[in-house]
Length: 387
Image 1: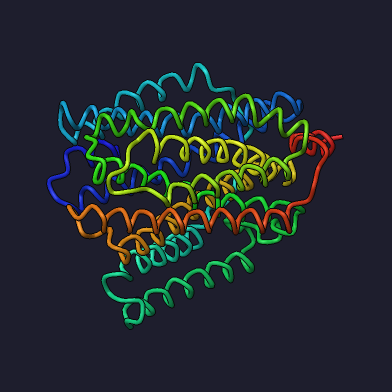
Image 2: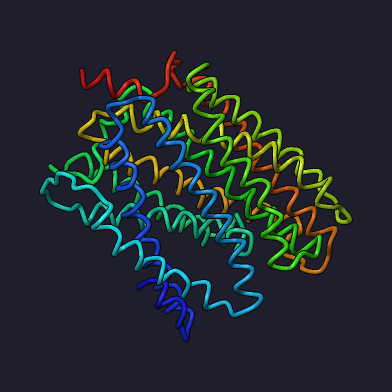
């Protein structure tokens, strides 16, 4: 429904409403999928690690396919078809759901609508304030009033969760060893990776002059390496060195790759300015994502797998939104708004890569200090907890 509304939108508000519905659908699907993985494969640590790897690889594959096919559709059809193409895919998934999806036990309970609305409004206000700050000014009353409103809403959400009998999120779950640390790492990982992906695509199109189709194709090597890394390298590295070491290695590689991207040039080329650095960053992402995802979910009690899945997905999405908003503000302040001015654009994008590299580095330092070491894959904790 969201894709249909966005595709036929006659005005901006209809487009935004359609995107809102799409986001709501994604918010329901992602944690449900992870919970189902835990239910199906939680009894076998090796199989769970493989399932997590395939789940993790599906995201970059889908993302790149979206960028690549989106460029093809936009160039040869029209932009509304970027949304229309989702409709048959969703219908196929809907009809296949009954035949392929195993039955799962359900539990009745109340829905914390107040908490959901409060935290959503608070996060949206924070992102809005950061995105608007370069235009309104960081010292303006508007910026700080919106940020204060965001802080008040988020504080209100915490208060609601602390006093509600059936909260949206049980706050004490964060006292579970490794859960808070893994979620913080996922938040920072999203805050570093998504801005890099976004500004790399802008550099290809606005500086190197690639059209939609070639710029999408240019991301394929990075995506292929991510998939190989998540499916083949990450599980083996986790089993050999443990999730903490694998996470730290990935974050250091991600920092290195994005720092290298900061040296992009106005007259650069894909082969020298983009490909090597992007492959290093992709390898780092694949090694950091899987162990932190597995640790965040397996650290919780089995009956709270759904809550843990929802939290880790939210952490990554919050990090992505806030990171992209912050890096957009940095890029704009350093010249990225000057379309057609290649040196200024390059300077702005370079600043965004530096900022993203700093986020990844902070993630590495925090993971080193907060994640507890394990000698086996995170999935082993599930088996131990179930006896």
